[in-house]
Length: 365
DNA sequence: AACGCGGGGTC
DNA sequence: GACCCAGCGTT
Image (cartoon, rainbow, N blue to C red):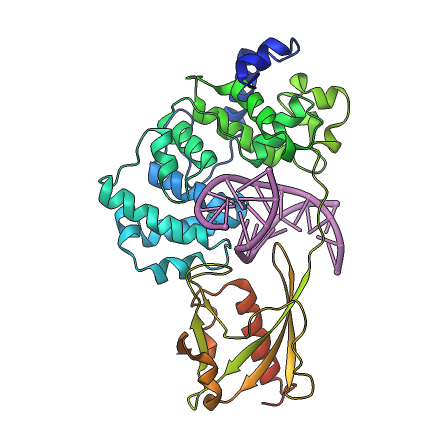
């Protein structure tokens, strides 16, 4: 039997009362909503451009990290047409530091499609939204609910955690996504009463009250509905799959200066890790350290990505060594401008360290 | 279905 | 310093 909201309802007599749950959520949200630059006041709809931009930025990260980026983007590009017409390198430069750079490439592509093929207006159909680059199930549902106030089942990480606790769901979430989705569907499918405010309320609750660690159940507006709380197991939910340890990778970064004291940088290829971003040139990143010990003066840079730790040797090469840049797109940069050109964190960190060592004479160049 | 993809917040 | 978190596209 397919697991749908209807089946779930039929199967479980303990399922909570949808009307009173939503009323509790909406009442709480009305008084406690976070005031965020992309949000409208309760009952109003935000500009779809702002809503979409914020949702793309918020994927895989948190509100606090996004706010300055959102303000900068909307200042530079007040409409989606402005963003569509911006050079890609400008968009990547402004995105630098936010991570997951494919999001920025898809954001730009999506802006161009909306600007040119949709006359600057986001489609108001979930299926149409999901066809656009960078818009998946979550973002499509969020835009439908929040910008258009149409019924939608919004499921992001915050809402997932809240609902897993409310329903006392004890299976590992990764292996039971459909069941968890059915909880959300049970509470919001087809609902026309403030769908956007309800979704944002659950997200704010997840961010402020129903936090991953030490949830503040005493302040929770829906504690009366919460099965995990009634069993005092809220701290143990959601059940995670066991985590894997991160491997270590090794590589070399080449710091090459010309006679003007400028540093050689590259534009990275458009796909893969840190794709389309500016970076310090270097070797491939391998599973074992390269054997350059004793051959060159070097210093070490450590950085952790999602899936591996990276240990880099920084070495100084002379301008004639720029043959290592064959087939690559490179350019020169004044070292003191490195903070302004939009570098991924690993390269920003590397150049900072390079300059510190150089100017303290701890490293002979 | 599994994997690749960053960086910041929290304890 | 270790651990925690989290959507979309690709394969």
